[in-house]
Image (tube, rainbow, N blue to C red; front, side, top):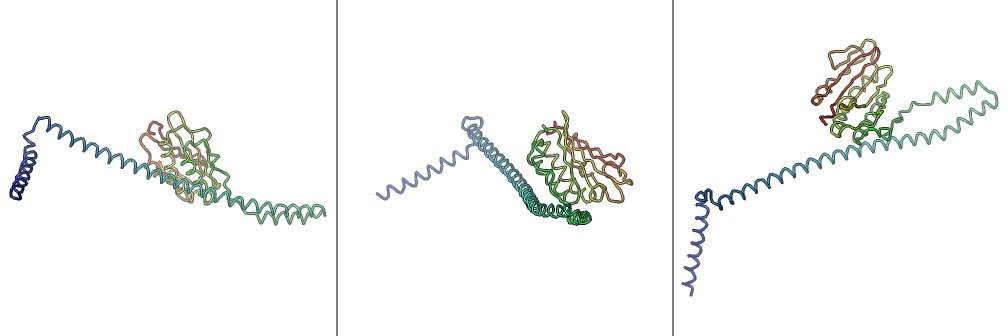
Amino acid sequence: MDCVVTPLKTLMGFSVHLNVQFKFYNLPSLNNSAQYLFFLGGIAGMLVVGLSLSTYMLMQTHLQAQHTQMQSQQQAFREQYAAELNRQMGVVRKFQHDYQNMLVGLGGYLEDQDYAGFRQLYIDIRSGWETSNAADLTVEDLENVPSVGLRFQLYHNYLLAQRAGVQLYVQVPEPLTATVTTVKKMGQLVDETLPKLLPVLSRQQPALVTFELGETAKQLRWLLTFPVPKDARLDGQHRVTSKQGILDFSNIHENLPAKATSTLQLKLHWGQLIVALPKSDG
């Protein structure tokens, strides 16, 4: 019985081996046959599916990374905004307590007709006051800006200006209708430019700058108006030089997209930067 089974197993194994070899070694002979075309179609389909899945996974990873970055940025801005509001609430509560004592003291001098004492107490009160760096601007004031990210960017730059001793006025007179891409690019230009100018602007008189966003049918426009000293001169097309420092706007020109423009000009004691982004590129 064993003698019969062993040759059969060997023979069957050899037959299968020959069959597999025949199928793979004779693929070229199947040229233009249905089986050969079906085989090539299957390989091509697997490659296309694999490439599609790889591209989809890469896109999803990139979008997820952008979303996470935006969420982190917005969270940081919200925390900064909340910290500033809490600080101001503490200042207000303290002032409410001191305010009553001030009125009682001033009222006592008036009741006694001690005008010299009244004047002296008033002077003492004023001398103890500190200039507040409270945020006059709030995020709610920027409701005309359609992008939440740009709102927090503008407010963040506002707080940076306050810390540098520069009063930043933000004006967005009309609701913006520019695309998300165009608004995002404008925010990048602001972040790359405005913080670098604050040290020089803080030495100007007055130390203030006006930031205005507006748009036309075809463009999103940024107007930055700032004071300049009498000796200020245009150095080329992108720099303002004076004894108080250099305002360099060349990085804006280098980062402008196609068809965008930037114009730097001086008018009497004021300088103005105008940046225009085409909406069609958004």
